[in-house]
Image (tube, rainbow, N blue to C red; front, side):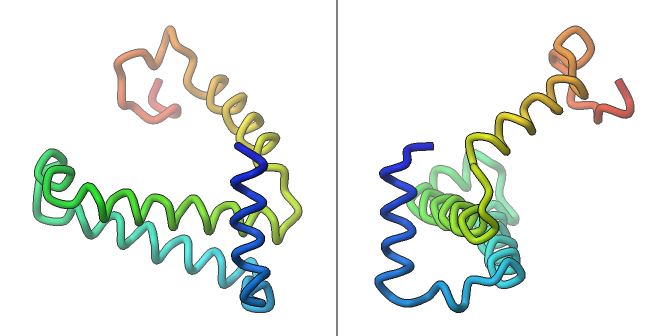
Length: 110
């Protein structure tokens, strides 16, 4: 993740003195709410219809999710590069290419 972008997000928060409200609990709630707003854009339509009619809104909701994720990582003093790399390593073990290629099965079913 680009450190300059992370710094801009943190500065935006700090310029408004919002850090006081950004507890891990509040950020987790906000992440869930934004994810649900993204999900709502796909409700009752297929993926292509949602993208065609709501691409700008999808971008905004996805950006909100990413921003809140960065703020939560900052609040909890987590290195985004490190935690994503570790998770990818775990996923590689759970979903080896030779078993998961072209399959949507959960790792417990492979």
